[in-house]
Length: 482
Picture 1 (cartoon, rainbow, N blue to C red):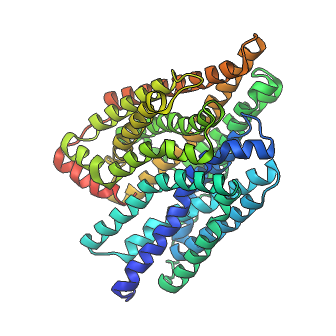
Picture 2 (picture 1 turned 90 degrees about the vertical axis):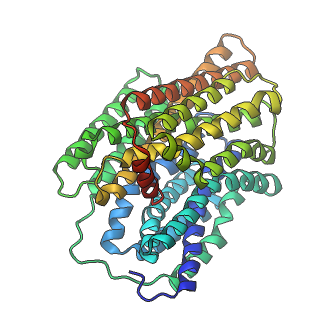
Picture 3 (picture 1 turned 120 degrees about the vertical axis):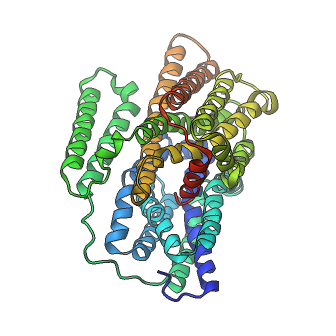
């Protein structure tokens, strides 16, 4: 499978692939730090700002599984190059955006490119490294890039936004994208894909993505249009109809994007529901806490990046093996349930943060608990999703849980941001001062996020089947390929 590529070139190719993946990972966190600056510059409202994040997440989640299928059909190397090129060009468009519409559309294209890169990068690494020892080492490096990328993102976002402007959080991708593209062409062997590959489920990908985009649009604009208005109800009705169409498509096509029979597996079904709830809490925390730090504590972008650093360092540390050791010692269920409870406690601390709080007593404890909870829970939820499936379906199961995670994050963020805005508007109309009203809205969003995390913890504790230590060890090895 390595086609005679020498040892040195193989590891250089891994570095190039990880650099491409790092660019994608950075974009999930680097933007959060710059959100208040983007809002002020382009005139976003508090609620419409959600689209800067969700346009990326929806296309990323909607086309993640399809990207893997297209890689099988047309070749992983070719799709990786296409994804990197698309992501780089979209980054240029984001950096040059001078209107809300241009930025949102470019972010959606970024998500599409990122989905393709993420979907095929692991297949390329698996083909480059065939021996168990080399593959384990390569997966460890890949996992560290995925776990540590968030830490780099918040710092880089703060540095670029404070020193230059928010445009540079996107423009910095251009030289990286060009270098990754050139490195892939030089180092990755071209492999002709088999001629008998199944056709990709394009209709399913379009249906599920359109459904969720309509649902998010209806939620985001529900405060403005009215929750019981004809516009909102029609949009939600169309979203439900498209989701039903997606389920019908998946039940009939020979090679579905998301095989419905997999949801008869207890751990996989539970992990997906847990993933949706947990992602709703996590992404809303990232988004709203960044706004809290800048709008109420008056942090600049660099200070926001530094404020998030403790949580991201803890998450990265667990991605390097601490989480896997917990699974080997205690199985899947206990770390997953406990990690989600710890994160819920962190969200509750944010739900009591005062208007003019100080970092150490009012922000840092919540940051530490969120980092600890996310670090402990993330690996077990992926392992739970894969623990009941056959080895030849493990890649598909990991794609399903990652898709649920992105979609749950997008919809949860839209709902909680809209709830926060509605609470702030209601209190403002009742005569409360702007700062108090704004913080009360944030508090409600954090509280609902904590409720979602507690629900996820309860579901994990009640329905996830734990594993023996030997089984957990095997699953942990499999999880490294996610």
